[in-house]
Every structure is written in structure tokens, then in C-alpha cells.
Image 1 (tube, helix red, strand yellow):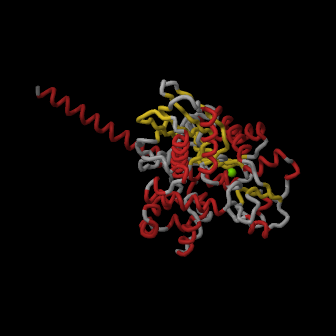
Image 2 (spheres, rainbow, N blue to C red):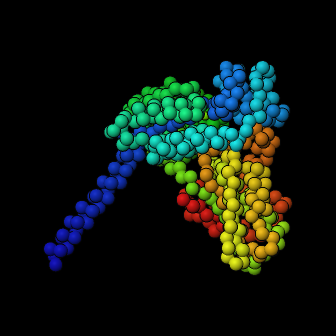
Image 3 (cartoon, rainbow, N blue to C red):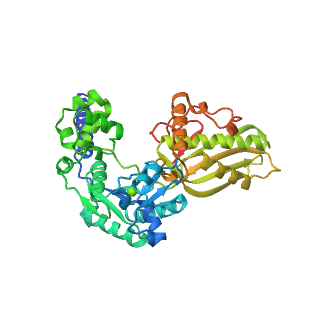
Length: 436
Ligand SMILES: [Mg+2]
């Protein structure tokens, strides 16, 4: 008996040390990895697509965006950037800076199509990729170097994309996402750059702190007030000081400045979707009620997309009748997360699907073919006022719950629960489901 006890303890010790070892290994992998992470970014994407369609735009300063005085620059060519113009700038100001610029309203459906063609090419070549926006991708080529060399794979992929689509694209490669993204920025336009393992800190040191992806205008101002301009200064500062000023973000920023970023890729699944459906206690034929519920559902899902910094490009409406026959119809649309664009699509699908003679048992809405990204893609349809309105509405929703702001048409929909962010890794909620 004693023998067995000793044996058991022995095995337990081996087992526990194995556990500890694999945990150390995981930490080691994430913090000092031999990873090969590539960040690819299409150069001034919207402008490049417009130039494919109209070669006269080559070499000219081009602005894409709303042309009204309240419009915003969604994308601009490198020739326009030379005048100090940048995206998200009010169009009025851009026009003052460069009166000869060609202004194009833009077409989000066309850009969505090209975005998907590029996505497909990357997906064919690389098993693990993240689509972080309509024109940006992260690829994990770790382990592929044994066969061909990861840098060579990335270079050939870049060539293939430009050859097949006519669109210029740049990439940066390193051991993690942050350094690769910054490297892409340094390589642009239409070029590539690799930061060898161990050179992350040296590569970042001379660059402006503004180049760190998490440093926005506000953080940049605070850093400037502290006398910090170059990443080198951040690297030499005690992490505690940054924590005092910026809290938790201070430590992350400090780590990024050192070239450390353990964040993993979020794999791209075309089928990934968010959805919501409602079964009625008593089957209904009340069209007004059904339509108003669809509006509320769409608003809810759109809000969750925006909160997760996501865009959808396929909407699906589902109707189940009292005889349990279920019908769905879907539509490919331009990438968006805006209620005022999504609602008409959903209602149009419902009108197409709905059989007026039958009682409805269930209705549902799904949004799929998601990509990362914020409002940019709709900027030329929207204007500053509309974007500000969305941001204000979402702020209220974040504080007081989803029902705090609701369109008049959606008022009749009764119970919609408090939502958490479906992309944050929290468990799915009652109404909206996340599907892999
Ligand atoms: Mg781009």
C-alpha cells in the first residue's frame, strides 16, 4: 500500500511539473516567440480601386468621401497626402488644402467586392489569417519557414495579389502583430519590410510614438505633454510611471514600445455570424408588429457589430410559419454596421419572403461574412453629423442598455435584454447568438 502511495505521489510530481513546464512554454512562446506574423495592408485601398476603374486618376490627388460641406475624407491618394490631407478630415478642410483634388463619392459595394477577392487569394495560400479590416490582414506563417521561408511566401503572395487584382499592397513581417503593423506603415507605399527577430526594439526606437497602433490623438497629446516624442524615450521610461499616467493601458503601451506583443490572431471564418430570433407565444399575422420587431432586432445586432468593431456583408432573414416550414433569404451587401443602411435591406428581404396568408411562429435576423473595421467604409454615404449621432447613440446604449435608444419603428418590440459584447469572448446571451 505504501508503495502505491509513493508511486502515486511520484506520478503526481511528474504530472505537476509537466503542467508547469507546458505553462512556461506557452508563456515563452507568446513573449519570446519564434512566430512569423505578417501584416498586409492594401495601399490607399478605395483610391486604388477607383484608379483600376478609371486610369485617368493615376498621379492625381484623389479624395474619396462625401462631397457636401459636412462630408468626411474616407480615403485619399498619396498625392493628396502631400498637401497634409488625411482620412477622417472634414472634406471642406481638405478642399481648402488642395482645391485641384479630384473628389469621388465612392462606392462601398465595389470596394467590398475587391476586398473579398483579396481575402479569397490570401485564404487559398495561408491557413491562419485574420481579416482586421476591409483592407488589412494578419497572417501567421509560423512553421512554414521550414519548407520555403516565410518571407518568401509573403513576398510571393503580395506579388500574386497585385498581379491578379491590379491593387498595390504592402506588408510588414516580424515576430508579432504590433511590430509587423508598424513595419507595414514604414514600408508603404507598394513595398515590404521584414524585422528580424531581436531587432524589434532597435527598429521601433527612432519612430514617433504616434506609430504605435493604440496611440490615438488624445494619448499622443498626453505623451507630448510628458515630453515623449520618440518610441526610444518610452522604451527607457520606467513602466510604473506610464502605469501611473495611463493605468492598465500604460503597461501595454510600454510593452508594445519594447516590441513585445503576445496577442494572437483572431482566425477569419466566413461563416462566423451574429444572429437573433424570436418565437412568438402565439403565432401572429400582424405584419406591423413583425416589421417593427425586425427593425429592433437589426438595430440591436448593428449596435453589437459596432461595439465589436465589426462590419457585416451578408444579411439573412428567417421566417418560420405555424406549420413549422422555415424559409430564409439572404443578400450580399456592402460592408457596413450602420442601422440606417441595414434596416431597409432586412425589411426588403422580409417583404420578399413573407407569405401573407400564413401565421408566423418565429422570425430571425442574421449578419454574417464579418470583417473587422469601424465606420470608414460608409464614410462617403454618411457625414460628420451622422457619425457623431451614431457615436452618441452608442454611448447612451453602453451606459444605460440597448433599449435606451430605439427607433420609433422598433418601439413595439417589447423585451430585448441587456447585451454584452459578443466579440469580447463573453458567453453568448439570450437573444443574440454567436455562431462559428
Ligand atoms: Mg489600407
